Amino acid sequence: MFSPPNERRELDGIDILILFWIMFVVLFWIGPAIEGTVGKARTAITELALLVGTIAFFRYRQFPIREICRWNPVPVKLLPYVFLFGIGGAILLDGIDRLVGLIIPFPAEMLESYRKGLTTSTGWEKALVIFGVAIAAPLVEETIFRGAIQRTFENKSGVTKGVLLTALIFGLIHFQIAWLIQILVLSVFLGWMAWQWNSIVPALFLHAANNYLSYFVMFDMTDELKSFYLFHGQLNPAVALSAIAIAYYGLTGITRLYQELNYINTD
Image 1: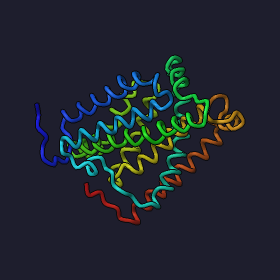
Image 2: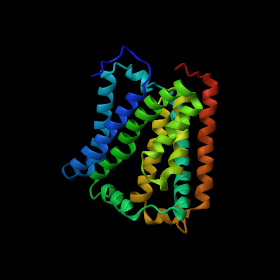
Image 3: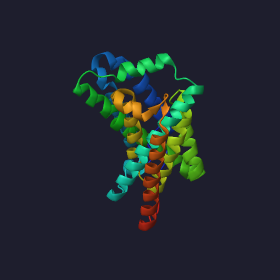
C-alpha cells in the first residue's frame, strides 16, 4: 500500500489513473444505482460526490488543493467578457453540432435517454437539473481536467501539448463521436483560459454558459423563439452572425484586460 508524499505539486500517472477510476465508479456505477431514488437530482448528486471523492483523494495524497485545482480568484471585471464570449461561443458550437449531425447523426436511443433524464415537470425538478448540468458538472469537470490534469501535463510537456492532450482526453471520455469536434473546440478554449489566468474560474463560466444553452435550446426554448433561432433545422445565419459578434467582443475584452493588467501566470 502506498504512502502519501509530502506536498507534491503535480500528479503522476498513478494519480491520474486513480482519478479516472473514481470518475468511473461515481458516474457509471453509483449514478445509475441511485437514479431510481433521487430522480432529477442524479446529475447534481453524482457530480458533487465526484468532487468530494476527488478532494478527499487529493487531501490523502497531501496535494495543495487550491494550487493544484487552480481555485484561484480572477478580476471581477473579467467575468462579463467571459460570459459574453461563452454565450456567443455556445451558440456557434450548437451550430457546429447541428452541421455535424447531418453527417454523424446523434444516436436516437442516447438522445431519448437524455430527454428522459432532463425533461422536467415541476419548477423544483428544473432547478435540480439546471444546477446539475450548468453548475455542478462544469465545476467538477474544470477542477479535475483544466485544474489538476492539464496543470500536470503543462508542467511535463509544455502549455500547448498540455492543453491539447487534456482536450483530447476530455473529448474521448464523453464516449460520443458525434460530439467530439464540438467538445475539442470548447476544450481548447477552456484550457487556454485556465492557463492564461491560472484559474478555472473563466473556464467554469464558459463551460456553464455552454451547458446551460444546450439545455435551454433542447428543453426550454419556446416554439416562437426556436422558429427564429433555427432555419431549416440549422442555426439561423442572422443568429450565427450575432453570435460571432458577441463572442468576438467578449474575446477582445478578455485579451485587452489581460494586457492591461499585465497578468502573468506564475504557476
